[in-house]
Length: 456
Image: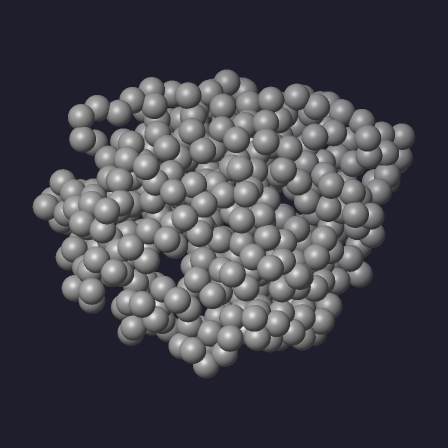
């Protein structure tokens, strides 16, 4: 359902290649020959004018790895759209969403053969927007953002070649984060399960209490810090990268060193299994065995516990992941975009809006085979997300995330795997006692900057 993360160096290469291949959006409603990224397009697709034209014609709709599990649902959406708009036809294709997704999509853009409506990740949308291959949705339909959570819509922008932020995407489905924990293990440590901490350091303090209580019989969480970087920094409102993304700045904030010092202390005191520092960071199995107090932060994990370990589920509760200094959560949605090269852009835009409207987002989110969350305000207020009965912790997890998403933004720090691993490796050295927290942070920033400089 999601495409692989593109490395920072690859993003730079792709953006450079696309920019060289075309000059971005050009032309206006008065041009006889308009272009988008070097491709000749209908003059109405570019410039500042509102998109007009008859909703008739054939388009291609591309998703990433959805057809196998959700063929029936999306075929139904397509049929209902075609019925509502006689004279339209939507051909659905499904990309596997593998590690070459972005490269293949870029090749399609350069060949002027992009599908009309595309399911994109943030990295691909970044490259295509900069080179001018996506329709400026906010301009072509000024009301297009109304259904979405306001903060989510406001933050769902990407920059063109001039650096201007454009709404070239519609936020589609997203995930969420919750605290999942074993109430018995928390109570043994003197922690009130009904009062989850509101800060990352408050959560660390609870980890420490568990370590002192458990004395090696069980643990608080897993040690590998890879899933916490840069997520914890984002929630603490620690700036990881400079505004232009070309340099690391996290060492400039003293709280980063405090964070690393906490991680080293917790590891030394036994809050985490020693053998989990560089191995899998997935607590799924040890949590269902009662060996760790905190489970996965993915809300779908609660359903996994319910299905696979009823005895642990009976002791499981969910709480709010700390908002910390940021004050809200952040989301990383999948997006829907319209190609500026579409020969039937009015049809493509109408279908993109139909696909992402509240009714269709809510219907898909209710599919029993998927745990996703919609991005429209109406959908998040649906009783499906708001009603919780009895000891249904899975329903409670849904409600918590739905409430989080009402104030969420799409602003998340995206690090290439190389940069992330460089930072993580230095934190691991500090956790092993091989470096001081302060030295590890400084070294991590230096190594990150080397990689960012290489990526351009």
